[in-house]
Every structure is written in C-alpha cells, then in structure tokens.
Length: 398
Ligand code: NAD
Ligand code: MG
Image (cartoon, rainbow, N blue to C red):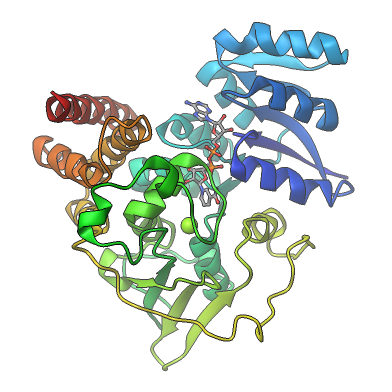
C-alpha cells in the first residue's frame, strides 16, 4: 500500500526536493495532488511525469496549463483553482500526507485545512505557523494531525528531543531536562558585510546564499536574518517553549542544523550536509528512516565548525522578531506581513536592503496589539499590516 501525497507548492525549491525524495520510494508513496502558482510549463512537465489526480493553479493560469495538458495528452488530471482548490486537495479524504511548501501567508488556509483534516503535515511554510501560532497548534492537537517540521533547524531540534516529545502536554517550560535550544543560523551572504555596504546590496547578492539553494523570499530572509527570527517564533510554537529558551547561534558552515541542551550538561546536535532532502525524508517517514541521495557527512572534510553570536545592529530583523514573539497576540502576524511586503519591494528594487527591517519596525509600531483570537482576525491583521507597510514604502520612495 502506498501513501498518497499532496504537495502544496510543487514548483518551488522545497516542492522539487520533495519530488526527488518521493521518486526514490515509489513503493511507499504516490502523488495524489499538486499545486503551483506560476511556471505552468514546469508544472505540466511535473504532471506528465508524476500523473497526479488533481492539480491546483490560479484561475488565470487554467487556460495555459490546459494547453500543455492537451499537448502532452494528459486527459485524466482535474484542474481546480485558487484557495478553495488548495484547501480541497489539502483536506481530501484520499490524501495521507500534505507537504506544506507554499511560500508566505498564502499557505495559511491550505495548511490549516490539512491540519484540521488530521493529515500528516510536513511543515515547510513557516510563515503560516508564525501568523497563526497557538491557533494552528490547537487545531493540530484537536484533530490529532501529525505536524512535523521540515525546516532544517526545527527538524534537527525535533530529532534531538526525546522520542515521546510529541505526546507530552507542554506548558511553555522546557520539559524532560531540556535547558536550552540552540537555533543555528548560517549568517547568510552578508555575514561579514559592513553596515555601510549593506545599504547598497542588490537582490541578486542577497539571493546568493553560501550554503543553501532556496526560493527568493527565504533567501532574502536569510540575508536579513528575518528567517532566523521567523524560525525563533516557529520553534516556540512547535516545541511549546517561551522565547528566552531559544538562543540563536551563527554557524557559517551549516553542518550542525541545531542543538538541544539538557540540564545534565549534554548538548545534542543533528548534523548533515545542507540538503533539504534530509529533513523532508525524515518528516515523510518518521519514526522510520528512508534513504535519500544526500551524501553522508565527511567529518574529515568539514573538520572545522565555527560559532558566533548574531550581530543585532547589522541584522535588527532578528531582534524585531524576538520582540514580536515576546509581545504575542497578533504581533507575529504583523511582523510577517510587513516583512513579506518589504521583501517583495526589495526584490523589485523599490526598497533598499536595510529598509526591510525598518519597514517591519514601523509597521509593528503602528498596529495596536490584541489577542490572536481567531483565524479571521489573523487574516484581517495580515491585510492591515500589508497596507501599513506598503504606505510606508511609498512614502520612503516619494
Ligand atoms: P519557492 O519560492 O521556491 O516556492 C514557493 C512555492 O509556492 C511555489 O510552488 C509557488 O508556485 C507557490 N506559491 C507562491 N505564491 C503563491 C500563492 N500566492 N498562492 C499559492 N502558491 C504560491 O519557495 P521555497 O524556497 O520552496 O520555500 C517554500 C516554503 O518553505 C517557505 O515558507 C520557506 O520559508 C520554507 N522553507 C524553505 C527552505 C528551502 O530550502 N527552500 C528551507 C526551509 C523552509
Ligand atoms: Mg531553516
């Protein structure tokens, strides 16, 4: 019996790595549904190879995809559209496993739909959890969905925590003798770039990550360290801990993917070559292990591992994320929305690199914090914060 997989965001970097892992294990997994937002030619090729039953694209892309399907004589693939289509495939009764690999807030509702339907959910789309926090964790608790981290750091932490961790009822304090989580960061492409130089850096430079090949948005987030800020918030929710138990450690080689410290003096680390196929395979098969094509770590080659504290002056985004987590309520959703708008503006060369964090800070200061009571409120907050951030960017540009 194979398990049926739905990949939300199959045309992206994580989507592609997921296909690679699945292709190695056709006896265990079959592909039921896929989604893509752009790059229809690529999506059609993926459909030709993997023959999903359903594919979801934006309404305005249906004609283009249908043309490719005609050309390839793909007759039995249903095309659905937009958010309802995404939620439908994520919650479909025939689907066992959902890879949540859409980038940004657009992934929130489909990821939640998968969680509410009690699926095994492989979470790459960190923005969805940052926005909805406890609401998402509660939904998983209620539906008994298995929410497994794909983000390499969180997957590493999960591997270093006790095996029964998921079953425990946690109350915000570290459990089972855990004293600290060490969340590692590569430091991104600008680790040694001066503040003056940072003012001038281009999108192409920001997207050139030293160790990982990723989508544009997360690449920019890695360059500002907002990625680590989002991951700090992600870790607090996934592992039910307060933010002061999470320390960010810059580790430029990206060989240790994170660590867990225990009260007896032990520090457990998960190591491996930086390749997302490893955490994807782990989350797919957990608690079992399946093979990938990732080369085993050669410790003689990677003999030197360095660690340093992050520089919060050059990378204030990390500080802002910690503050948003401390404030709680809707502030993480505000942080995320403002960051998405600012990163998009930076990629379009409408905003300088250092102004990304400035835009986020401004937006956090403008929006009044309230308790994050419902998903509707989160979605409303997302829209509001986007407006505030966009206005600020317009003002900076004029
Ligand atoms: P990507 O940009 O390469 O791919 C994003 C995918 O989402 C694409 O399939 C795209 O078509 C789809 N998409 C984009 N906008 C959409 C929208 N509005 N509606 C529906 N679909 C949309 O991004 P990625 O690097 O694969 O990252 C995906 C997620 O995984 C992000 O949340 C990222 O933070 C997280 N993540 C990525 C990596 C990595 O190595 N790439 C590592 C850890 C976590
Ligand atoms: Mg990560």
